[in-house]
Length: 116
Image 1 (cartoon, rainbow, N blue to C red):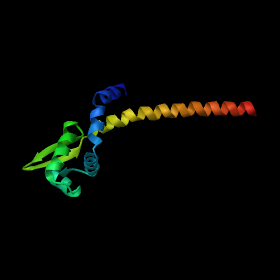
Image 2 (cartoon, rainbow, N blue to C red):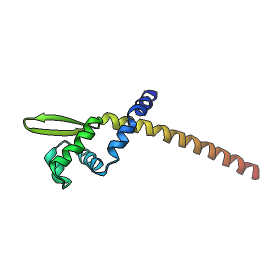
Image 3 (cartoon, rainbow, N blue to C red):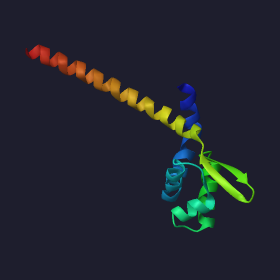
Image 4 (cartoon, rainbow, N blue to C red):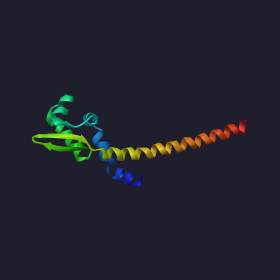
């Protein structure tokens, strides 16, 4: 868990910055369904291909997508590693919240028992 947190501290802001732009987030959502070419992404999002390429470059530079060349086409897919790291980091908050709820539950039971 510590390794994931350290990784996220170093790279997490780039992940959030890259995903913070609505078109890039939409691209990631499309790629969750499978690999797509730049042209397919541009068509599905009703944008020009150069605009899609620009967003894909940002996602690729930040390690969120991977690209393979097939003749004159570029095929993009999600790189799961940053998302798994993000999930691991977010789980620390869930665990912390659950611990706080457990403590609150214990406290409320204690108060209830004093009243009875």
